[in-house]
Image (tube, rainbow, N blue to C red):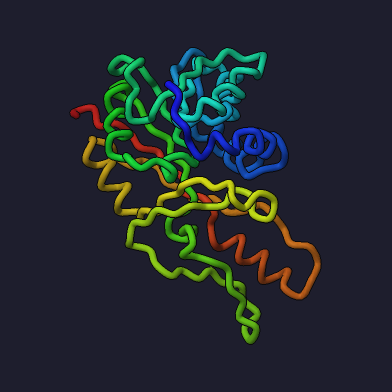
Length: 252
């Protein structure tokens, strides 16, 4: 399969980003390791694995990992990393035809579901390939506070408060997002916004129960300045990411 995607155009840049200080490396990965509790030999599917950053880390912990991504450019980068054995496939997340029914213990979808259009079929495929006691571990840009082109930071000078402005929430939207504005602003990817109820309804439709939910905030601290306290408070109080673990209903 060779499908042209917006992520293929920024594959090299994305690889370099993840291997530097990044939210993926410093915030998301430690939390996922804590929550996944990977056991040696467990079969993990990293859906939308990109250049394999998380796949490789899960394999180091003893997981038998399969990584899939629609971008052949990202998978090509992933296969160049040596040391850990991960099986990679170029595939669409809603067509996992190379996997048989009920063979996967855990599925991770990390900052990927928000870039996928056909979420219903993705969750249906997850249900098909997961074992009866399997779970999906999903990480999203927080849909209540990070809405593409519909949310932003503001500052109340009188109250000395930094706040998050939300211009819309319940409506589902599709936007083109510049990956690294100021350098190559013409390189963009597609991002979808959906409210929380969308995800819960789809998960329920395919027999999943949200058994754990966490909200993760930024670990960054502002440099000294007149707005430092307000900025640091806003980071602590307004989360960047939403995590939920979705357990498969054994009766489905």
